Picture 1 (cartoon, rainbow, N blue to C red):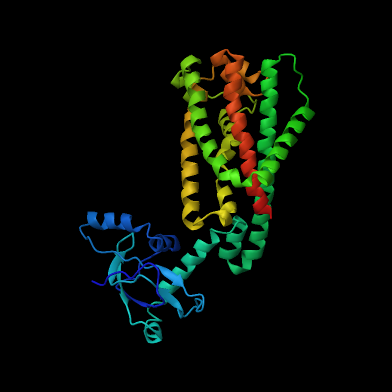
Picture 2: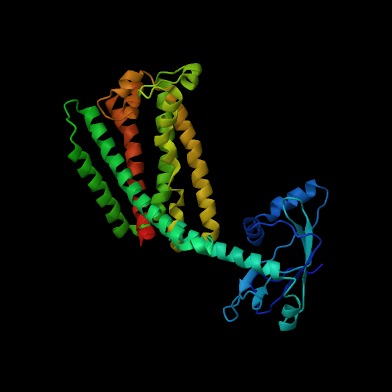
Length: 384
């Protein structure tokens, strides 16, 4: 069997010809998995389980700057083409890939047969390139939408995402201002709420976020690592006291009893409306896409970071959510708290300590402040 060529081509060009027994229904994403050599282990496992331990193909395309890709396949080089067999993950319908002679003659001979492979690999490369654009969603829409809809859809998506990120930033900073006011009210019963207090605190957090991005932008990666540790440690520093010292609700009451405290007249409607505010909890995972131009190996790092971020936060979100609903305690005191923040009252009811509650809330304040820092970094690049 022919051995794979070195990963870095030395100028030799190969062309492949696909001998199709039956053209598999291979999507662009699946093809890109093969292209990135990430799906090979999974397919190998399926083949072994099916009793057909066939060798797999890994064909990686490189572009010769002097000979750009054209629809006919001219100028496409392959640095690792061997006479191997691979299958699609749906039904393992197989086709063979064979290297032809080096040079123009081989490429012309294999042009028609390799057209399918060239087209799909070119699209995979385009998809890979679009992941490294800081513009994000509207750029992807512009690239992949039907031509007749490209301008309209990308225009709408562009404005929606730009406005959303600005509002998201303002919302995070406003939450910090509200939490600080809640802590002041907790520790000073004579404190009187004024809206302009929250506005000034919001402006201060926005200013801090902007200054950090101007002066300490190079420290953003270190900041992210520290905040990840702070998020995980802070969660357990909050959850453990609530379970140890807080009141415990019965599962039947917590999970199955629905109340219409908002006066909507329908418990089902009330429950659905209650879910609306937490819909956006896991938003913002696309922020790294807008930072992609500053990331090494973005096409590999971006998907990994997004999946890891969402997966981790889903787990932490469930832990915190289950803890809060089971340790809710007296509902009336939570709703009518003078802090303006029900979860602050939940913490205080559990700990009966102003200092302990302040520390627990302070963890959230720190995390959301630097969430604002990250959002400035993202939204500034996205709107630019």
